[in-house]
Length: 206
Ligand SMILES: Cc1cc2nc3c(=O)[nH]c(=O)nc-3n(C[C@H](O)[C@H](O)[C@H](O)COP(=O)(O)O)c2cc1C
Image (cartoon, rainbow, N blue to C red):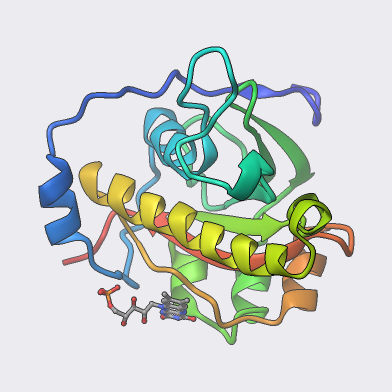
């Protein structure tokens, strides 16, 4: 497969066996993950919950956004064959087509963990969701106040990852402790991308 050929994810389901209340009650930050890959449909659900399209007609998303300016860009880091039938690498989530585009081949989880004060869960989890922001999309409309809106919005996205992971029998932890510049280098991103959260996702060890 060509390196830039999009990988279309299975369509997300809008039915599950865990109620919203159960997911809220069970949600916990987990930092120990089994050496088990996740399926493409599990990844599909997680990404849909993070930024997927939920409306018909207008392209509104599962997470609210100030003025629908959508400043967040989602990257998926997977290693150790962490996602069923998807090669290790760094992928960008294409919201409109619910697909992934790989922009780097190889397992960079250890480098990502080093950029985050050696946080082991980043290396152990099969998948790390990295939420970055392009501030100018929101700041253009709202000036300096737009920065606040971006920070509020990443919290919405992060909570959806927590709840969706819980509903799927997976788990996550929101990691905010990292060196922005190093994370950007590991992800091979331009300067305007500002990483805000790293969220390892996998099967929890209980
Ligand atoms: C903004 C933010 C940043 C966080 N950063 C980290 C982090 O860098 N490392 C970590 O292990 N946990 C981090 N956490 C997770 C918290 O430690 C965790 O939510 C808290 O201990 C409460 O536990 P619970 O999520 O299981 O309820 C962060 C949480 C938030 C909301």
